[in-house]
Image (spheres, rainbow, N blue to C red):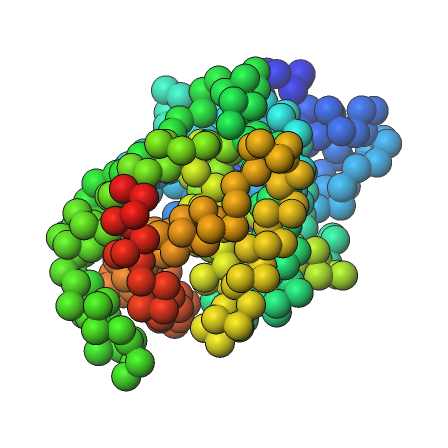
Length: 356
């Protein structure tokens, strides 16, 4: 079997040694997998598993991480993320100048609304998977924004449109369904410091007056390749505090501010974000490494960063209002609190009015 002939397995038990041999052949030519063993299954909005490999000949990874579509959540992915964006990104083999999992194979079955990613097991590199209950240090956040700066600078402006492997990439545009979320359920759990400008919102006003106007600005200014969903739960920290990014399902093109704001405002404690966000934005600007005539000035960076709170606030008020449907409640609440505080601190409505 050739790597180009891989089909998407219906279940992890269908992953044969021959299938896995073909999957890893691009990075490990000559390796022949003798046995595939399911070590861990961890299904969520996607089907995920860790598989152990042993070899009849040659050598390769001792374990791999695999990810495929879950039929119960396909409609959600089509609505919000584009079901095949992540496998198309890694199947394109476009070089990304930010730490992310190495992908061995990314077959797609369009007719069955399914895909499969065969990736490195980041545990082998000592990766610490993060979530909102364990916020990053300022130094770790600095590594994260510098990684995003390298990524954005590489694809800034016309570069993202000229990249041959990214001709399928869509602009970031609003999606529907969030204006029905019962966000009022969350307000009494945000705590006494929740800004009144947040608790006065309804789902309809949040989406129509805050989120939609911001998202529409993402394609009216310089665009780049966006991770699209770089909240702390889609990050990991390596030994030495380098930060990497997982789950590229919402990859899009658009203004840089969505990635940077969404990452910083959720990855740090409220106190650390207040104390260090100006300096971290300067780190981001420096990491872009753009010609002077393309480099945004700090006033523009600050303005668009202030506006970017619209994205995190909307997604995590809606997520927190859904109970355990999409995310652990403690994680969702922690992020809703951080984006709510940022909304009040940064006067996001004023920034939106200035850029809209």
